[in-house]
Image (cartoon, rainbow, N blue to C red):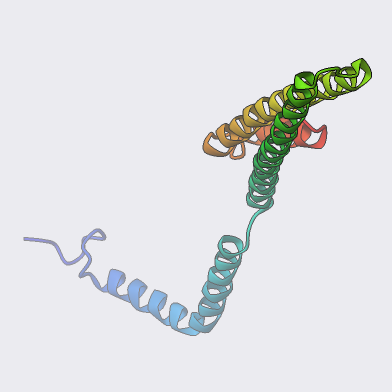
Length: 168
């Protein structure tokens, strides 16, 4: 059995009186508490709804990296097209050289001119091939940055954006 005069007993008149007074006080300040809860909830929503500076920096990093990757891919496509056109020109020059060599008395100036043009076209093709290889590597590097965590980490993101700014 419990003693009705025990202070720890929740059914004692003192405890019931304290509970009633607390409820009366809460009833009086309920509007103020509702306003405070409303604005605190609104503040939490605003902070979570709008992007933080870090999230904007991540988006900037991803956008820049994706643009660089697309530029590298377009450069590869361009150099491939240029190489195809140059190879076609090379075949034409080689045919002209063979036709000139097949004549009974070919002019050495013509043969030298054809050979010079063939050498120039071969050099251009080599240049296009080197450029294509370089751009393919760049595209692969940027793709690995996109699939990695570089744009999520603040220190890595700074390195990536600096590399883009310096044309690497």
